[in-house]
View 1 (cartoon, rainbow, N blue to C red):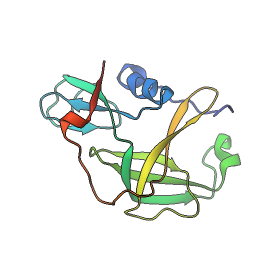
View 2: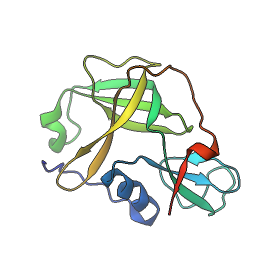
View 3: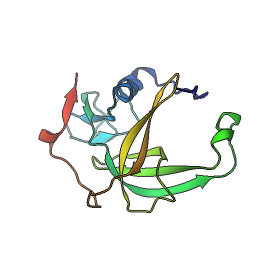
Length: 150
């Protein structure tokens, strides 16, 4: 396990997200009123502004919306990673998340990807790579397929 060098400082709203990554779960907030899922974490639902929400385990599946390969380090901590690929992933539950890509070659827009977790000395990051055998396209689970985190 290496030291990442840059550590997220989530605050109260984001703590359950990072707690989830440490146990291999991608967690999202889901509004109790509207059913809306969102990311990044926040204290109120961005749709109806209620503070009534649950943390739920996401499916971990999504589709590549966009991507870029970084060739110039924006910070000296990431210089050893150059080049690295960043994805925008449309999660099955609806939110879009920014993440690192872990796969052979270049990703493709519309490619189905699955979350994986990389442990560093100070944080566990969700990263995405190809998910073989899953049909592409938005797939929104019913409420019964998501488990609440208490």
